Length: 130
Image (tube, rainbow, N blue to C red):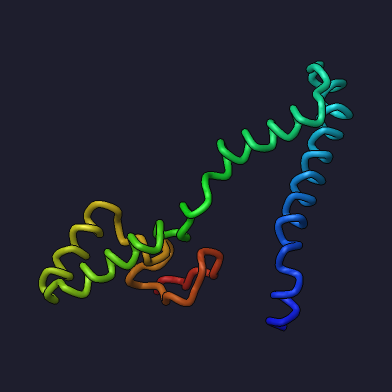
C-alpha cells in the first residue's frame, strides 16, 4: 500500500484541484439555473462562482488547523487536562461546584431527578403515586 501511495502521491493535488473545479462548476450551474429565475440576481461566470465558493469557505467553513472537536484545538484540550490533573481533589470538587452553580448540572439529563431512574428517558411512563 505504501509503495502504491508513493508512486501516485503527485496525483493528490490534481485530484483536489479537480474536486474544487467540479464543485465550482456545480455552484456556477445552480446559481445561473436557479437563483437567476427565483431571486432575480445576475448570472455569474465560472470564476465568480469559484470566488463565491472561496468566500463561503472563509465565512462558514473556517480555516484549516482551527478544528479540534467540541473542546477546541487539541493543544487547548491538552493544556486543560494538565491543569485538571495538577489540581488537588478539594480544588477539583470546588471547581465542579462552581461549574454546577454557573451552568447547572449539565452532564445529567434534565429528566433525571431523585425519584426517577437515570435509565428512563423523558417519554417514560410516570409511576403512580400511592
